[in-house]
Every structure is written in C-alpha cells, then in structure tokens.
Length: 503
Ligand code: AMP
Ligand code: MG
Image (cartoon, rainbow, N blue to C red; front, side, top):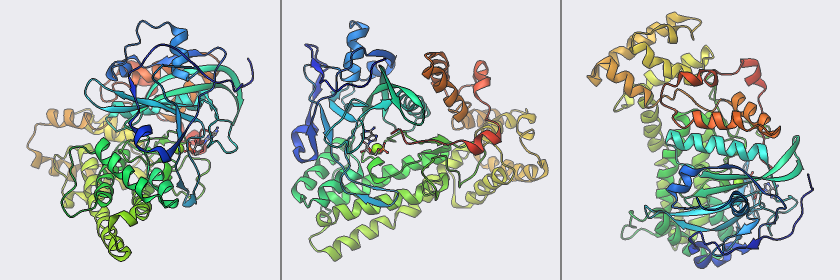
C-alpha cells in the first residue's frame, strides 16, 4: 500500500457523451479543479444495469481503463471536472462556505430516455473547498452508499445512484484504518438548498435568479410557472411537493437520513448523501443512529419537521426574488409554507395507508394507522417484519404476525378494526395480501448485515457485499434464499449501533 499522492489525472481519447449545462450557465457556483491520479486503481464494483440505463456503452473497455475513468484518475476527453460551491445549515447553524470538498462533477450524461444526469465522483481528491479535509473517501462508507442508495432505488424511492467503486490501494485513518476508495455517482443534479443559499449570502441575485430558472428547466420542465407567480416562489412550491413526497417515502420504509442539513437536501427531490443513514428496526419515532446527532434533531420522526425547516431556509434565500417588497415576499412564502403540514399529513397518511392495504387513506384512517404504530412502539416490534406479516395474516398464516407480539390481546383488538376497515376495499384477502406485499418489503438493508458486508470488504472479501446487494434488488419479492438477511439484529446490538458521517 502506498500513501495518498496528489498528482493530477490524465486525459484519454474516450468520450462519454458529457455535456456541461451547469458549468456553462452558472459560472459563479463552482471552481474547476482536477481529480487526483491514483497509481493502481482497482474496479471493485460496477453497476452494469445503471450504466445501460444511462446509455453508457463501456463494454469494450478494459478493466484498468474503466477503473481509471470511474475514479477520475483518467479523464474522458469530454470531462470538465469542477467542484460545486454551496453553503448550508448544519445542525441548525449556518456554514456560509461549504462546497464539494472531496467530490468532482465530471459533466452531464444525456440518457436514452432524454434525461440529463450528473456524473460525479466522491473521494476523488482535494478541491478549493476541502478546508481541512483530505479530499478522500474510505471504502466502507462508499460501499455503504452503494448498498443503501441502490436499495432505495429498488424500493422506488428517488435517490442518487451508485455507478462504480474503485479501490485506490491506499490506506486512510478514519474511525478505523480503512482502504481508500472513490465512488462514481449519478444524480438528477447535485443542486441543493445550500446551492441557493451560497448565492443569496453573496447577494448575487442575478446568478441566483439564473439558478432558479436553471432548476425549473432541468427538474420541472412540465410545470410551467403560472402567470403572476415569481419563478422563485414556483420553485419553492415544487421543491416542497417533491420533498414532502420523498420524506413520506422515508417514513414508509423506516429510513433515517441522519444528516438533513440544507446542503444535503436536493432541489430535484432525490435522496442524497448517504453518510450516517440507517433503517429502523424496532419501531421508535425517536430513533437516531448518527454518532453526532446528540439531540435527535434528525431522528426518524423529526424528519418531516426538518423538511419544513429546510424549506424555510430555502425561502429566506429566495426572498428577494419572490416579490419586490420584502413584506410581500415574506407573506407569500409564509402562505406557501403553511401548506406544508396539511400536505405532509396527506402524503404520510397515504404512504402508511398503502402499507395497510388502503387504496385511499382518509383522515378517519389516521387513528387506525397511529394505533398500529403505537402497538409496535409499545411492544418494541420490528417495523418491517410486522408490516410484512400482515399479508401472511391475510393468507391465513397467522403465526408469523402473532409470534412478534408478546401481548397478542392488543394485537387482536387492532386486527378486528383493520379487518372491518378492509371490507371497504372490496377485494378478496388474497388480492389484498398481494397489494400489501407491494408496499411492505420482504427485505431491507439491515444495519448489522450492512456492517458485516463492509467488514468483510475491508478484509478483501466482497462476496457478502455482492450477495446483500443482489438480495436488495427485489425487495418486495419473497426470497427465502435470503431469509438470513431478513432478521433484525439482537436489540442489544441495535441499541448500541452508531453510524458516522463518511468523513
Ligand atoms: P457531508 O457531511 O458529507 O455532507 O459533508 C459536509 C462537507 O464536508 C461537504 O462540503 C463535504 O464536501 C466536506 N467533506 C466531507 N469529507 C471531506 C473530506 N474527507 N475532505 C474534504 N472535504 C470533506
Ligand atoms: Mg453533503
């Protein structure tokens, strides 16, 4: 193993079909800089299905060149690497100067279905925004991002995607000694609330306005701005809708993002930044896994409130563009943000209603949903197993659900109410059960299984990582061959489980 070096990447003749609308249209929001060269990059993971979806035909390339391209050690002829600038409220406190400290945007791919997708690297070396950081990433956190982002995508949750992981052959010192790695990531874009904040704080209102227009054109092309509404207010509204829909999906699948700073909230509505994230086991709305989230700011059940808080910061950044008079701008933004809670309530109700087989969850169903969750919380029952067992119950295999409950009498009282409500769906139990299975995964990425896969990978054995990733590709199908990956950890293990920002 060698220690990290900082020689710059070499360019080759290959073209990936990259274009550069962000670099061309928003020149005040980045600095160009080169990824570093790596002596012996080794391709550890390549997502062929995603490459195909992105329209990248790399099948003829040899592995060494692919490893070079996927780590930034070799640049395609059409790459134009840069580091994006952004600000961000981190745990409630404003950091005016953040930016990609260890990431490079290479450019944008045009997919066969006409979407524009960022191709970026993480762990690819220092940039003008690195501050005291080394610009590098460790293997464990990069493989973790692969597992969780790909699991989220398979669940149907909007997410940045993982294209490749390249080992650098170097050693890093983090929570533990770790091999170094670079992740190649695809995203609808890397624009975040913090990107707007960066320009607003510097009072670059023209550039800010251009970013608003850029964002609307790129992420919301089918949603024209109504007459008489400012583009900035329109964007705020659209981002609010997407974030509500996104966070409701997180609740649906028991996902805890862990670091919902404004620089980690996208304007596209994709989940980004898989650092200290983790899935719930026993249902507990106060669940936190991140080692640095001492006060539970980003606890499972607090994510909706943080979503609104972040949108309020976005509104502040856009205020000057929302209306010429500040009072009027504040009134318009406030009026919009007041719609957050009723819209959230509806999105959450339907997300949870789906899990109980309700085609249309009504306000009067909230009690049924809430009582079920309270039951899980009081008896400390695994969120995922409990929901999945509801379909077994409908199929007459009652044991699967009953065995999870220490006090089945409370369960039976709730089940009676649920059965009564299901009558309104007018479907036979077998069909209801099939519907439930589309919303309650058989498999999620269990924290202890993720850790197991990562420990093996650190020792050079990628097979548990590959098997887990494979299993998570079809999360809603019964896959008895992966039964061993389904079970939660011992509660004593989960109680002590901690996640870390991938720094
Ligand atoms: P995150 O918590 O991953 O969102 O990171 C917060 C900020 O720290 C971002 O601007 C990152 O680019 C930066 N950062 C994280 N790790 C490193 C590192 N090892 N070197 C330089 N910058 C980093
Ligand atoms: Mg981040």
